[in-house]
Length: 262
Image 1: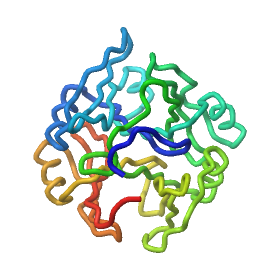
Image 2 (image 1 turned 180 degrees about the horizontal axis):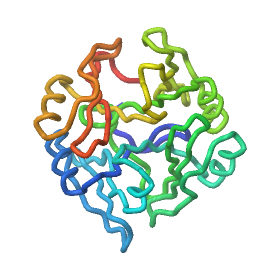
Image 3 (image 1 turned 135 degrees about the vertical axis):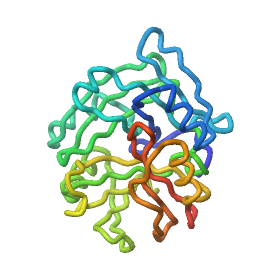
Image 4 (image 1 turned 30 degrees about the vertical axis):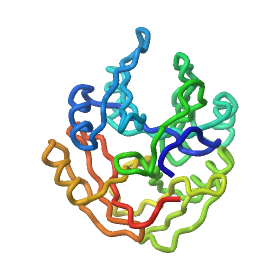
């Protein structure tokens, strides 16, 4: 897919980090992925950074507020779904059994956003574009390539998101756990995985994947930069992946693709 100029409704269009420390995160991700951090003019609002790769915007970053920390929100990567009307989506969420975690908010002239939690517990954001349509580069090395929900009730999650976004699902026969690929507008648009007992106390959550050229080299670099490895590199039918975390504990996945993404 590579360079993007727009997204269809229901497609993931953006990812951003709620960082434990902006300065340290700039250094970590800049060294790991070659991202250039560009501070945004938020006109007195909370600080926000857009990461650029080869001149293209690929991800964003905000700072965890004191209120977030007091409410137990950890540093984390967030996924955003492109929608035509945030207010209309938010109105449907409680009707479908979900919860609105952040009411609609206009972000200057960039767009409008809201946060929601599906009935199984996963948190995700919706984005209605104005001047900011989303990532200008996806799937290429060091850009995001996949968004994935780990849930304890796959059927309920599918029912919710199918009704909310019009997503369709294709069961994967390659995954060791029950897994459905999200379909949106005829394209693969992420996945939903059934959590098993082996997950322990980990709550349902969305994960962000970034493409890399060499998974093992990337994992070594993560450790060198003070990050940690949650799941060591392993082979999948679509490439070698690993789950890692930055020095403040924000987790993400990296994958060296063996097949071209849809």
